[in-house]
Image 1: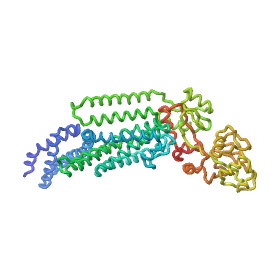
Image 2: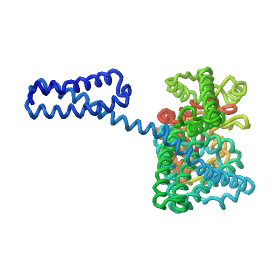
Image 3: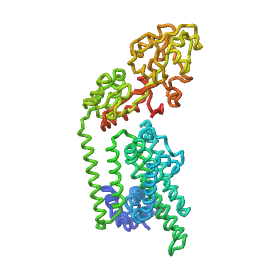
Image 4: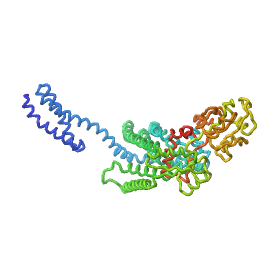
Length: 588
């Protein structure tokens, strides 16, 4: 065919393709109707055929270049459109397919939820009546020794590890869900067993923590992520029962056909469960560990419950098919959104300042922490004060946080250990001793051992350096070693003063903060074979330490909670001050 005749016959199609491409350039493929999209694909295929013909017949370079450009433009839209369809399918799945299948399988999932709830209620009642019965309901490895709240037990990790923790939580939850789903192959026996085990564990542990006075914290701790997580577990169990149902009661279908049909439905549910567990794990890794009030945690849990219920009940429905119940859920969702907006507005309207009052020894550390925290848009103020005056300011409401060297008595105060303060026993280097047992320390400080040669050292008299009786360090020493200090040389109540006196006094011994310990003519004494390190404290081999206590009058405010969470993870600033984090010492 001659080139001129070829162009005359095919030009209309090229112009139509160009018009479609111009429309796509202006508004994207989403602006094209389904018929136009189909036409685009057909015209693209026709243009590629024309390009091949033009090249094989050696038509002019201008014609070949034009068709090359035209097909290249169309290729980008045709194949990018295919990639976008993948996202569209994902959106369609979570926006319609999954919630519709959830509603179709509603009775099965409801039966699983009822079984789980009954197991939890029975376990709660049994353990509440007889706490030791927890060992009959759960394996001993799953029964914790309850000495502190669930929040302080399970979420005492450095917040910088939150992404890794969230990933681990998601992986573990998916494993549990897969067990309940795969249990369908065992005629549902494994699914039901796993469901009962989870219900018994939740109920038994709730009663166990409640018996120790940590009940509200237990439920508040699992509330933010627990609604989505536990719902996902029930859906996974429902998927397993669908598989079991196809095996046990296939109905009029052949068993293999019933398995294929219910297997597809169960697969849809499990894909949805994976998405829900990813959300729950993210919340558990990033939101749940934060030091927030019970009201916030319960409120967050209620919000997730309303949003999840609305999603599962409303998503994927056609317009005009909503029942009164779904309309009620829509209203609840709006109310929840209003609650969230109101809560956020209330928080934003609070004072953008945290008032901190600290003992003089902690003031430099708090000043550094406050300066680092200002990047968050909050300006903490730090003032120095004595112990009793700090408590008075907390009671009067003129301070939000008090930083103290010991936790106060009184149920109205809440203690948040911020950091570990290791103390070291130091001796003048002429003493010739590098290690002492607790018994030897008691003997020395009670005045029974008076020469270092009696403790395996040099023939040098022992000079005890004593802090004032009211000193917190003196109180800590007495509580750790169980013996009052004999009358020695009284020095100022600072680690610097004690260290200088130990260095200058032959045969002297005293106690200082670890940050002061490494010094010339001074030996850090190993106590019962352990030096004051994070590893020794974590292994419970070293006992001579205390805490930096963050004290609030009642539950901490939202701003104060966020500051505490920030401060306890600032390892570099805590180490600079000579302290260790509660995470690396595993003391919380």
